Amino acid sequence: MLPRLTIHVKGTTGLVISAAIILAVLIAFPAYRVFFIISVGIGLIVAGILYLRNKYRPISEKDVENKRPLGLD
View (spheres, helix red, strand yellow):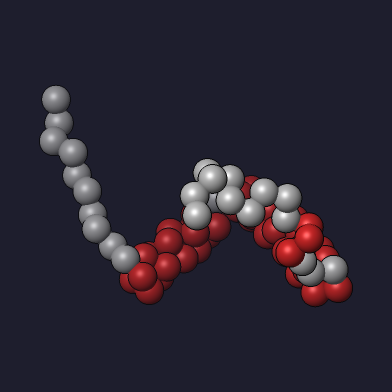
């Protein structure tokens, strides 16, 4: 059995590495670009809807039914 290889990356370094991997995949596989654009578009639409919903109709204390689900005081 092969030993497990783990790389510990945190914070900004991880974000830069993941962005580089996505960019490399977008360049290497042209068909992936369509799916990437569609998924980013769906994500932006959902984020916009959630932003507007929370801006104009924020959650109040009366909207939350069970404030202590575990019964802890």
